[in-house]
Length: 185
Image 1 (cartoon, rainbow, N blue to C red):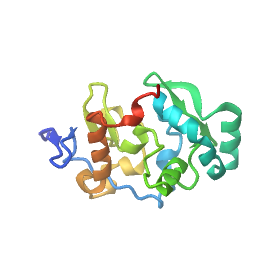
Image 2: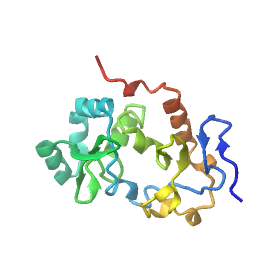
Image 3: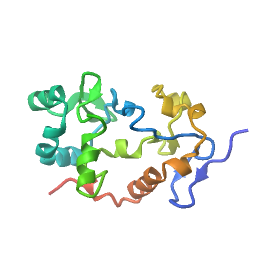
């Protein structure tokens, strides 16, 4: 029997498999494997925010990633969800360097998610084409990524215990309170 869809009481975000999924981020033990070939799509305002702050990130990048960005930019022509995706260098997101550079720089400024694309912030939560949220898990809804952290057998933790911050972020996203998504005039 399939459990009923669940709305997290704390955040009022409807997540289909919140009670049955299992997830625990073990970074840095994993090396940030979710940044390997991730290529998240980047919205217009996200692109503008990263571009505007690029000088802050460049000194922290891997040399080959910095060279790629300086030559070709940080997004590719490759499209996901109709948007350009972040570029990859040597199999890793160009902003990956022992963790996410966007995350690290934002954290030093008091907001770890300040510069990250929302899809990276929300991970492992994903919104399906129908608009419903779910915790990404192996083979669920066509999940192609075989990351060990998406294997429900790898962790006994329920997402309500391990990704409360991400659930709260999605609440903000759904509530339209994410001012960064609005393009600047």
